[in-house]
Image 1: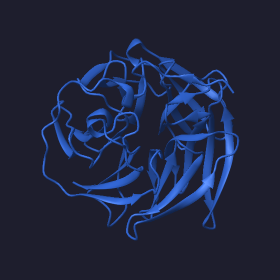
Image 2: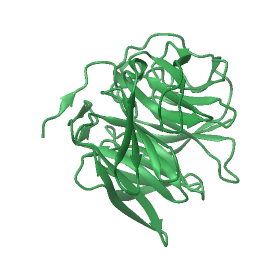
Image 3: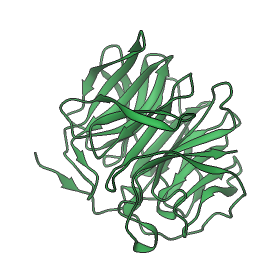
Image 4: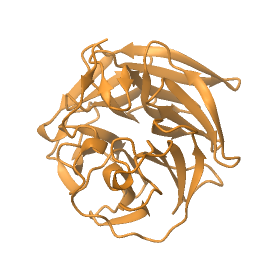
Length: 315
């Protein structure tokens, strides 16, 4: 297995920590669940209708189930044939699409051609995992977002591309790229726009797209000057973003103004934040959940990182 080491700012925790630090807005932040060991890495998350969290681990090929009320977590399923889990999104009720491949967390490495996409379903309460497709031409798949009830979009950070994948057939129906997709990471679709983060440009963009995934306009830079990872979109167009290198979670309003809602460059509160997700279930609204890698690659002030964790931010 040949692993390639990323030495460019394609993965945000390796990017230089520069640019503006968003002004902090007071809010409650709490740890929902934390693993026991340093060197662990929660990469992404999805939320079930009952409020539970499904989190991917990139240091091992596992999906974890976390109860944010009991503050307990356990390994839910192990993904076969790969070494790490990457992105995840909810497709339909209790159905999720997961990206995985041969990756290592510390130092970050990946095997080109090893990327795979899986379907996770709960049947009578039990998790069932099956392979949707392999992506032999992909390099490193990262963000995943729903496109339709049977399709997802998947970003390839290294190739600067977005794949349209039919979950029912496993076929890659379309592939789109753009100069500003360089280092594309987290993605989201809303109101005819593809929202995305470019690692290489350290910019949060949006671009208009057609229903057949053709770019129909020029990319608009909404916010730039900070290393960012994944995003979660509110219905009004507000974006919540994991600014991993700054150890912050920021809110970006549609006009581009930003506010930090958790963490700081000198705090371990959101150190190594990798992804965020807005809660929408009854009783859990006004909460944003986030995954962290414990600061692997960029610990606070060069100190020893902590175990990966899930945090909750009251909005």
